[in-house]
Length: 523
Image 1 (cartoon, rainbow, N blue to C red):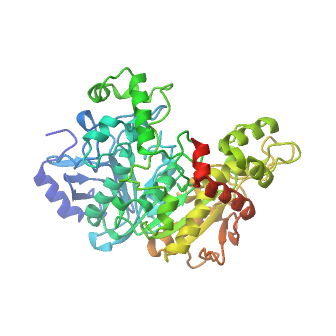
Image 2: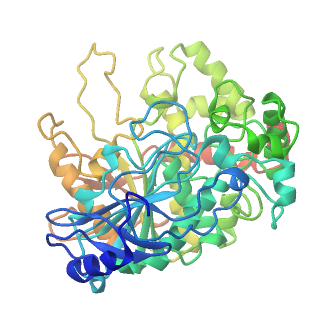
C-alpha cells in the first residue's frame, strides 16, 4: 500500500463519518472512477486537488487520446496539485507528462445538494498553463454557491503534434488535438462523478481565458462534447477564422494535412526517424526552444473539430448552449510589437495583404503614433471579431441566451506616462472573475466591479442568465439590438458594441479570406 493511501475499511469508516462531501472534523471521502479519494475539509468547503481523470499519457500513450483512469487501492490523498503539463518556464509544482488531473472546490454538504458546476480551462497559448496558478484558485467562486473545477490538459507539441504516422495508427485517421480530447475526457469524468461532490451534471458551465476561451469555443463546436455542458463563458477567446498554412493572430488554425507536414519537420529537427523514436524521446526535448514551427495549436482535423467554425455555425452545427463571451479593451497592448508607424504599416500589409489599406483606415495611427486605436486592430483580429461573430452567429442560429461584454477597467494613466492612453490588457479580468484582487491597492471601483463580475459569472452558471438582485441589468445580445455590457467600475453599464464600424471592415476581410481569391492569397 502506498504512503498516501488508507486501507479500504478505513475509507468506508471515514465516509460514514464525513458523509461523503459533508464538512465537519473528518476530511471528506468520496468514491470516484478509480477508487476512493480524500480531500481537505476547510471551514466552509472541501477541496480536492490532483484527482486523476485519465491514465497517465506516457510511453505508448504519448500522442494518443486519453484512456480510462488506472484504479488504485485504499484511499488516495487528493490534497496537493499535481505536476503541470510539460512546458518551458518554472513552476513550484514541477512538470510532467503525467498531468491529467483536476481539482474540485465544493461547498456542498451532501451529494443531494446538486449545485451548479463551473469548469475552468486555463490559457497559455496552448503552449503553457496550469491549474495550480493561485490567481485561479476556485475557493472564492465556490463560496458563491457553485462547485468549482479546474482541469489540466496537454499543451505544446505533446498536446497538439500531428504526424502522418500518428494519423495512420488512430482509428479515426486523425492526429493533433490531444489537448482538446483531454478537456473532453475531463468533462465526461465530471458528468460521471460530480454528483458525489454535490454537483449537478445537468448544470455544468465551462469557462476559460485566452487559449482557454478559445478551447471553450472549440468545445461548443465539437460533436464529441455534445451534452457535456449546458453553458459556456469565453474570456478573450473564440476561434472563427479560416485555416491558413502560415498562421497569424486570429488565423491560427491549420488543416490536418498542413499540421502533419509540420510534424514531419519537427521529427526531422529532433533526429527522430520514426514514431517509435519520437515516443522514446525524453519529454523535455519536446519543449526545447528553436524547434520548427507548428505542433502547438488545435487543428481542423475533421473529427474533434469538423470544419472552419464560422461555417459550422452558419450551418447550425454546434452545441447550442447559453453563452457569455467578451474581451478586454486593450488586448493589443499585450501583442502589438511595432511602435514605429512605418514598421506598423509594413506589418499590417504583410498580415492582411490587399485589405491592409482599408484596415489601416479603420484602425488609424493617431498623431504619428501607434496608439490604442491602431493597436485595436490586433485586439479585434485576434479576439474582438471572433467574439462579436460568435455572438452574432449564435443569436442568429441558436435561440439560446447570448451575452456580450467589454472589460475596460484600468488606471487613468497620467499624461506623460509610458502607458498614457492604454486600456485593459489581455488577461487582466481573470483576477476579477476569481475574486482575487489585492484589496489594499485597488483601482477606483475595483472591488465593486470584482464582486459584480463574480456574481454575474455565478448567476450565469446557475440559470443561464447573469442578471440578479442588486446588479446593473445586462441585456441579452441580439442582432437587432447588439448591446454589450461594459464591465468597468464602480458601476457596469450596457452600451453599443465597441468599434462596430471598424469590426465590420474586419468582417469584410474575413469574408474575403473565405473566398477562393482570399484562400489562394493566404497560400
